[in-house]
Length: 172
Image (cartoon, rainbow, N blue to C red; front, top):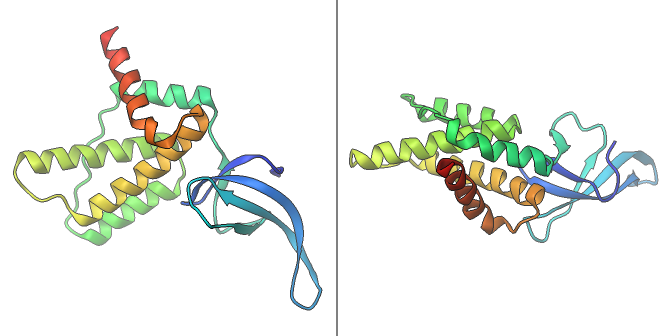
């Protein structure tokens, strides 16, 4: 069970801070099960109340700084292939399944795969799809927000941080 002050990843919301853990009172005065009160770190004006035993939305701790650094060090060795399919529904299902796994390595591979697809299409003067664009933004947002928390850097600085680390690795 998480405690107040813990940083967690909540579904596709991304990083949240556990504000408190308490039993909620239902209308009529009946005491319900324990709930987390979560404050998303990158969404304003939002509070999430979720049961401690929530089986519908996945929740896990934010990765550590060491895990974030290890993940970034993998980038030069990753060669994800663009995912192509004939229908947008299959493409959407593939992207949603990857994002729902809440795995940073998978999110990194997904963003690199979609970005590779974008470059390939632009190189052949073809249009980059709306579905690809939407999921690229979502995967990057989830990945960069978790890395920002783990590395204790502003979210907007994460792409430059990654680029600097990858460049330094390539120079060695």
